[in-house]
Image (cartoon, rainbow, N blue to C red; front, top):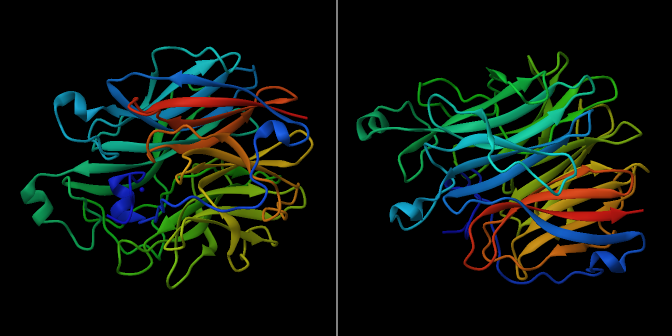
Length: 400
């Protein structure tokens, strides 16, 4: 997702090496939702839970007919087989989805979005376009036998469980998620030095929210191993002008000799700035930001946002403010948020809102928010309570 204590995935151990601290953060303005004027926590809820599975990394969209579609990654809970632990890299890791009309009652059995023919898939990230088309990006791992591992074209991303990184892909739906077409494979980008199990340059990938700009362009911030060090990644902007069918490289987003950047959500402000909310590594879990004022052609130097947490998701509220949500893997474990001004310039001073503090282990977070109605927002994430299974959960907030 060792240095990575209870990390996102074995992929991140090798691939992103985000550093999770364990000491509590000391921050000014940390507060509960009901102490922020106009913000009230309504309830927490379980969206999907099955002790036989490790369920994680949700994304959610609201269809034009009001239905909510929530995608997540589901894989076997390996402890059920007598194994010591469940990894985030699994050959039976599939992309699935559940549905709801009100954000509280959800279908019990998930529908399959996609099962990769060559390995397990991760982190389905959905974007609903203005015409109703839904894009869902992901990436995969292939599990090779010892002789296959020996014959890999180097360099390649490999973890201790015999899996090799496949790179990114996306699937598309034009009927509200009832059926999915693809996969569509994005291009390899030049900074990426690694090869996939077939000996081909790895296709672009990343976990995080895409965004459809005012002019119809789709923005996607992807990651790349820009040095011969599998623990060092940078981020780069891809742009699609044909609803995600093809992608073109635009510009570097955040590149640093010492700091790694990876899981990133991108957002376009009312003024037209393209803002990237970055997860960092080797920076004490600092949330970071990079901004483009020329439509994504160039980005200004990345900056620390002044608080810990990852990854981040940005939701535009009806009044154009931005609800920024993120997981918090420090004591107390849970989910946090901030409400930023429309141009996302007050991130360092916006009060930090605590949604939950009852997490059982650091294997939690990855929030993704959606507007339920004019005043209510559902923040989804994956979660666990002490001694409980990993599950998909949510918190409903009232924001006026």
